[in-house]
Image (cartoon, rainbow, N blue to C red; front, side, top):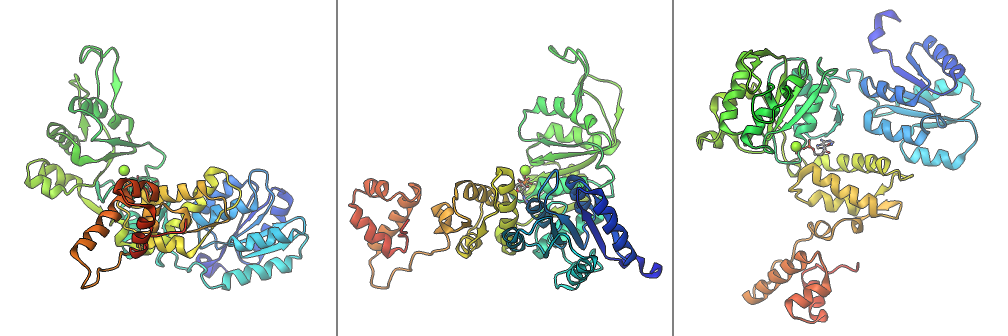
Length: 454
Ligand SMILES: Nc1ncnc2c1ncn2[C@@H]1O[C@H](COP(=O)(O)OP(=O)(O)O)[C@@H](O)[C@H]1O
Ligand SMILES: [Mg+2]
């Protein structure tokens, strides 16, 4: 077996009975699997996140989690991992529920070792099993970032390549596209992960305060500086500083930052002795820095220093294939966060409406939409009705006016749509604002395909 050791399938066993764990680990190791045993769900989940196994065999009743919770977490942390559940009592409906939630199989205890062996080898043969060369095959998540679009795959690859390096990185993308998440991933998979990751929003402070926050000050540097204060750059030593909205940084501060990058030292405000620092710098912006340079609002020399590697995150509307994955991810995440017992299913009209929506607020907006839907829904299925009406209707285009329909009619339709949207699709309010009866409004809305039974 030694010659093909690297391709040994990985199997994790999780059960709070240490005797069971030991017995299964020993038996499966003899079968040639790379086996690891866990008695705590927390420990097992960290390991799954760091090194996803092909198969996780877990008890459904643990001290610190139950099987359904484990399933949900594995779906997020390692969607390629097959989960086999073991239960101490014959709970058929639990089994059905588990299979629906994505468990590969369900074994009722006591079971014969042979039964488990067969189930594991079935799981390994089942299509969708992670490729042996997992590094080369596309994955739909990486370090907590979800995405199957080519653009996101490329970003995963870049993160893997540059995380271990100390080079500066500039992340560009609209608000809510995941810039901070990518920065955290870069930090989290780098050798700096044990040290701090410190985000700093360059747009949130006045010029003086930016220097004070980033560089700190010496005692007595100014009135009120009663003691020495460490700046964030020093606090992030050996770790990573994330300069968010770097385009908002005032020019004098840009010059100071450039000096820090070049000399790898800083002066606290009011200080005279340079202090060496070892910090990785990741900057982010939603602005077009090159335009800002042309307008004299951003220093070109700093730009070149920051963008040693540039990561561009496209807006969500340009990578729609990521939407279903993100919806699923957030539904599971939010259900768990809200402490709701069951992850709701997602109806086709819910996904369809979201798939044609433009998401000006990108992934952050999608997350908010899902949070709202999960919070308000009382049904086991999320449908289009759980979406805000403007999003539900976004996919429905008003009909093109017929040739002989008057210009006036078109204007009227435009005005009605506008008011109807602005009232949050409140018919009574719209009719009142337009000074028409509800029946007339109702007829117009039907013409516009904007009428809903809700
Ligand atoms: N690809 C993604 N996968 C999972 N969550 C994401 C993704 N992109 C963004 N998010 C989530 O959306 C929210 C906004 O992301 P953030 O990194 O703060 O965006 P930005 O910094 O670009 O404004 C966060 O809660 C983040 O976790
Ligand atoms: Mg941000």
